[in-house]
Image (cartoon, rainbow, N blue to C red; front, top):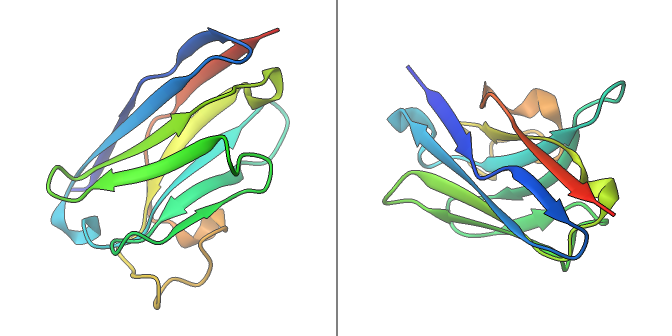
Length: 127
């Protein structure tokens, strides 16, 4: 059974940094695409970043240059380093996993492309 467990969320002032971690259990996704999404009340879950097993990285425009996704395949862990945080980054952040490779996945940016999800971790950025 695949499980994703996130950690690292919290309260930070604008301009600060946080690092989110997501540990994945279940070998079926260890070589697939990993992603981070976020959601605020009343809005749809939106793409933040994704990483392929080989290290290709993709970012949503509003976070590019401030956020960095990385993964340690040996530890089945994916990270999201968030720098220069802004109040508008406040959201629940979700780790997501797909067993499909970059060439198999329909869209890195779509919620529906990911089969497994973490429970979410709250990130709050105060002004």
